Image (cartoon, rainbow, N blue to C red; front, side, top):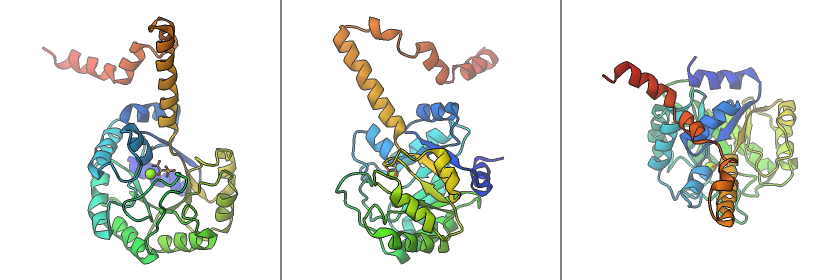
Length: 290
Ligand code: SPV
Ligand code: MG
């Protein structure tokens, strides 16, 4: 089974698929080892790893090359975050085959204007494109894929933009009609009420995708019980974990005046060498180095 087929089968199964954010292949490998179903190729995480805002500051090629590196490292499906599709429907028609060729099994495209602003920022610029325009972008994405199992996910930002439930449902339905395989509905409310109300009133046939960053109280068991959600995406837990751990270790080394105390608390160099794929290189060496 290909990665695309695996993701498609997971969506069809009705069971909840979990995707963890990654901003590089090492983190993606850790997510795979931890047992997540797939990788979320997060624009927020990659932007943060370059220390720039998640607002289309990074180029498409920077994101695309990272997706290629991640996809070539893990054997679980990669869901690529292509923000607004890097332009209009014409751009999308050219962009999607590149992500497919890079090894992604899905794209998520959001209905905001280009350049976007990150959804979770308080008072961010959250302007949406016309529904018809975004339908054209979804149709372009679906038509441009080579493999029918490649998944096109349309992301509704109406709740993020403060436009209300009715507009969010209207957009979700319009995007399903345009050919989206799933609808990502995003909210930055600190409780799940807004999302739960949307899920309850969702009349569509395609599954929903949730990113519960702002309302972490909602567990996988809670989400699975809703029965309309196909994928849960953990949007930024790799970069936040990294920032917390790195900060703590750096502070400790400054405090201790050296690395002696902190050393035992860190993963060993041997572990890192293993994560680098040392075993494979040793096998290649043994076979071919003459
Ligand atoms: C991302 O991780 O890049 C996302 C999710 O798009 S969010 O940051 O919540 O918008
Ligand atoms: Mg994003």
